[in-house]
Length: 171
Image (tube, rainbow, N blue to C red; front, side, top):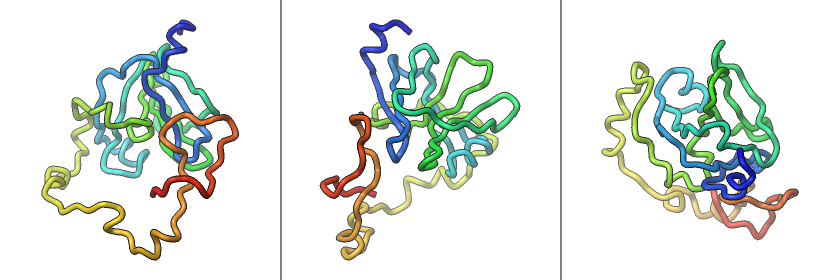
């Protein structure tokens, strides 16, 4: 990656605790939801939301993830301190996929397709029909008053950043 490219991160992201951070120097391509059983287990959810980026346009900017070889051809990166799933890559590929939820601005990276649909859960088709509520509406006031977030904010922070009492409330 050229130094000029490295200076202009388009997107950034990282884990929940802030120990591992990364930057994307190009827009992801082929953003997707993967419903395969390995992805379901890797993220602990009904699918993995993934944003592929060429390795040359990607850099770990704070810390490095631990890895798990989920198969003989793929490796997944995660934060060993907080457990956040961060990446997926085929061992022989020039691409790495970051988890959309670990991006600082995930709304800017909408998926454009579904993969691994053989394992797609049938009840996903009914999600829009479910009632919804905000976190504030669903959390008891006494719990809200006691709650202090230890989550890293959705932007880069100076080295040595730690959560403090003046942090915004969040879940």
